[in-house]
Length: 175
Image (cartoon, rainbow, N blue to C red; front, side):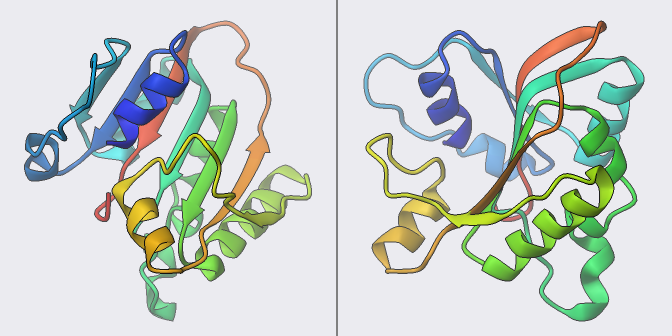
């Protein structure tokens, strides 16, 4: 659903929605009205995908990590994207990066890791209940139940040369 919603919000961009689960990808959501044609969903391991994008100089203008599985136990830090060895490659891709979750601690940690890696101050904000609506079913569910939604965003820099990829939606075990 987030792939479709981002494709509708950014009609001049091509949006890739990536998930490692064939089951989740097979449960294609119903789309009211004309379905956006500027998007594609792929089954892939994001660790490999991000490294290959960097290796082949494919730089997104934007990339989103939407409700990534936060692995809440202290011993699971290395499984969170900002604690994973692939994190520097994610940041090196450039573009606007946005991480969103209902778990503020996860987003705060993500922002701190971005700050440490880039030297740029990154803060977290509550996700506004804007007219554009939620990006994911999780946002919709949590918003309706009164939970706070959090995000951090950072413009990492523009892609230079190579093949520009307009949008990349990184999904996780929870999306």
